[in-house]
Length: 409
Image (cartoon, rainbow, N blue to C red):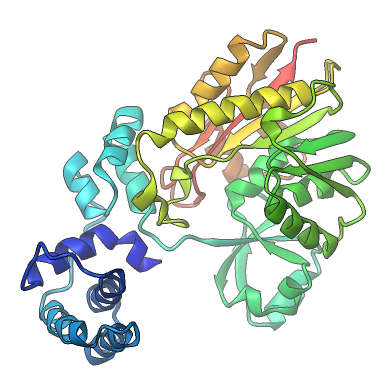
């Protein structure tokens, strides 16, 4: 993960040290060099000889015995260089911000235009940090069991039902392996909390199922349909929910949400749409290496189609509600999708997320500090936009966008 976060800086460091800087390297050699350089430059507890030796061994194992000598020579030069001063507290300008935080320049420039230089710095710095591990407990008694297993945790910063892991490996505990707790980022949990209540619920893009299970937890009497276009992902979701307390409550539908029936049936529909994922670059750093500007228009078209499908599937009842969310920071995938779809669906309106947040605070589901931070993230149109790294020192989430739509009564 560290290599993926710092890959562009590692490549810029390695390239001048090659005998032929413009030579094309085999993928295995590039990876071996990056792994070694990352350990030498960014980690403190690995001896130089061990980092170099492992990369040389990887090169040989991949069948590049001659190149292994070059890997050894280059990494010895890297080891002689001073460790970088990250200076991530500095307020960089666009180009130097992209270089300092190993983000694509085109993406950083978008954030500067959309959110300002200070916020772009906060987003980019957040993308270079190890993300928090947050969990959700199905049973409050699990806390005692986790403590006995050596897991240290703190209360959630946003949600009272969340816990932030401070130390220990929760995946090694019996509670995790039996499905009595789930690893799920707090912002992701919040989306399902904001969805609220219904008697017949559709989760349009349900896999991997974390939000589906929160919907089931909050609506124990509801009929819930978990829908996904991918048969493989839907089957994995089916198996996951079968081992959870909600196995008898959730049914499954393999379908493209953009092509849902026009016969309205659901009073609550959640659309956690597939997106670029630019709000999760700390957790998924590989995204920055494959995402291209032109991908955003393609995502936009797909997201509009899915949201139209969700509106068709919603009940004609005036109480029907549709929640649209992404883990993207890009306007094309967020506000612009909602505006375009509502332009063609006059029977729907957007309501303010602030009202729902206040309800959750009154129910004791959102912490006081979390509610105050979230209120500052609600835009004039009522949508909620969480920008990673910009919610203050006590609140850390990935980036998410949420719009709440209601049928006009």
